[in-house]
Image (cartoon, rainbow, N blue to C red; front, side):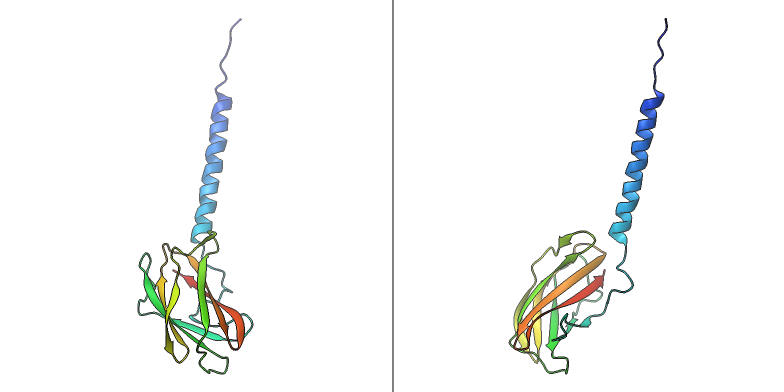
Length: 151
């Protein structure tokens, strides 16, 4: 009686595993580098969620850099264009497709007057779609504005 080795089954298993790994890599690459949907507002000037505020940001560092801490100036007005002074402002954000936040904790460091606020500590550690949320609490009420960046 002779015995035969079955090596075909092991090779098939390795081939299937290889195909699965390749498929996952393609999917992950697609998720990592997919730009935001065309319906996402990519402007630096937006209206807050409940319409209480018009919010705009400016930066001297354009294009917005990667791996470089820089500052922004936020301008907050009413929908009619009146400056919103003495607001409490919080900054948060992250990459929705990656499920992580900002690598820094940006903060308002100075009220510049006329509804303008100096924000220090903005930093983006990789390219892709970023979402920046600006929480505003002032006399008009509490609201949030969202900026979408494709870096």
